[in-house]
Length: 104
Image 1 (cartoon, rainbow, N blue to C red):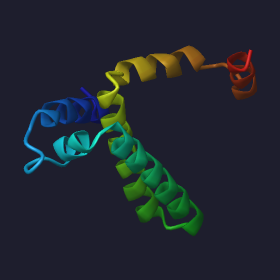
Image 2 (image 1 turned 90 degrees about the vertical axis):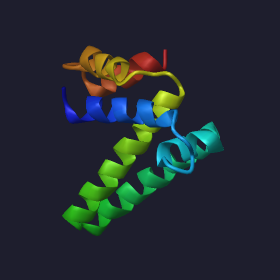
Image 3 (image 1 turned 135 degrees about the horizontal axis):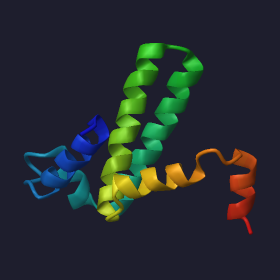
Image 4 (image 1 turned 90 degrees about the horizontal axis):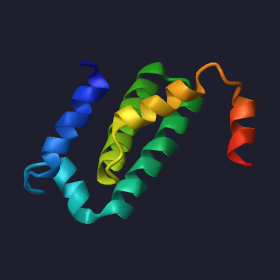
């Protein structure tokens, strides 16, 4: 089992915990809008870290972004496996062709 799959399982378990004891449960108690906001914030922080050129900061922010994205996916009952299957489907396809296919 890989790191993201283990993290996805941990997040699923912690959703049922008390918001006083779990950050994941606290996010869920605050609602989907707050979870989505956190994904946006972490995305912006990742971009800032990338542009600042500090490798370790980028690594940390990317980890935060992945974590919050998994929280969001879980809140919407979207399994990581489904996202990975979509990436597999796109493998070998030109990014330009894939984007054009979505806009049809």
